[in-house]
Length: 237
Image 1 (cartoon, helix red, strand yellow):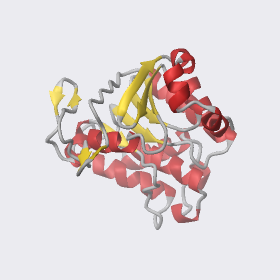
Image 2 (cartoon, one colour):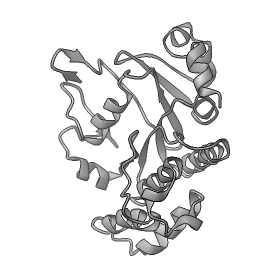
Image 3 (cartoon, rainbow, N blue to C red):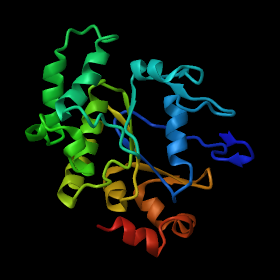
Image 4 (cartoon, rainbow, N blue to C red):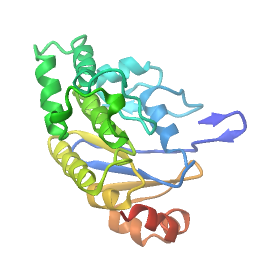
């Protein structure tokens, strides 16, 4: 992915498999959010392909990718602040009816997902009045309301307290166990190391290392690029 003379992503290959949480980490500006934008169709890559279930979807629009089963959250919160938490999730569930003919009840889906992310007691609160961390849980529930096959999460623990972060980690493991493919961008290293089975490390737009959490922690290249003293302190909440 090029922006004029800047190469934001160079020969990046990330594989996200069903049934596991894959981590994508790296310093600020490494290209993680750009990678998400390319995967979801918000930005067209200068070269390369996005392949989903064996099909090349590089030319497909974001809404078509969403209908195929790709959902995401955003680093910068993108919830509907003037709607209630429940209505935020209901919007996505109602949209899903455009392609899902299974006869599901959108209201029941919204209620179930708010319960699943632990904020059912806040269902009728306007999202604009909620703390940022709680609003991120609304955004997570909204993404799940589309019944995705692949879920991309951009710093979901930002603004969450320790208990909420632990609950998100538990939920991600449950979702993966149910067959969902999760790609997690996160600066909280305790969450990444405790949740992901495989981690890809981005630096200056290139993958510099891929491996298990234990492999990543042992890598001198990763330690030099990302897991130095400053990053370790930032991730240890």
